[in-house]
Length: 144
Image (cartoon, rainbow, N blue to C red; front, side, top):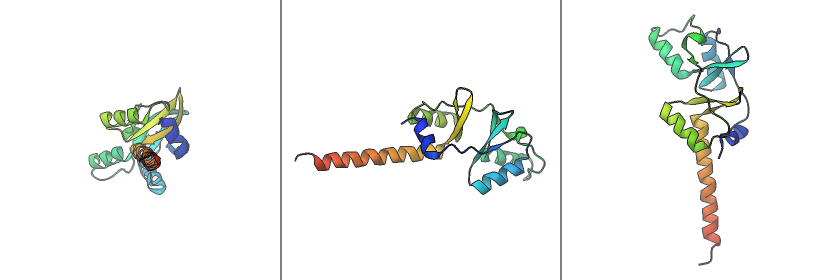
């Protein structure tokens, strides 16, 4: 299964934030939307990623406060990206190897989505369930 298929099922909704916005605003959006990351867009292009990991690090470094902290001060700059044609197994390997939970998906220079480790896990589960049903059907219909 290609990443493109996961994005098609997931939808193309991208929630973004600007680098000059406040981290506290990003936290509010992530909380309201029940998501763990925001794509940081500057001048129409991918500039970074803001995830709960960076927020927690900022809270730790600032003694529990993120007041007055801008997104560009803590975001992951120039994040690793991946193409939609990549197979899910390869994506999973890259995410595990580089400890990435949210990966922007780029088609050329256009951002088309974000793949989360949760998306990958769900896709693998669904693919395994489908294969399991097919095998059970094959076994049931095979001559004894």
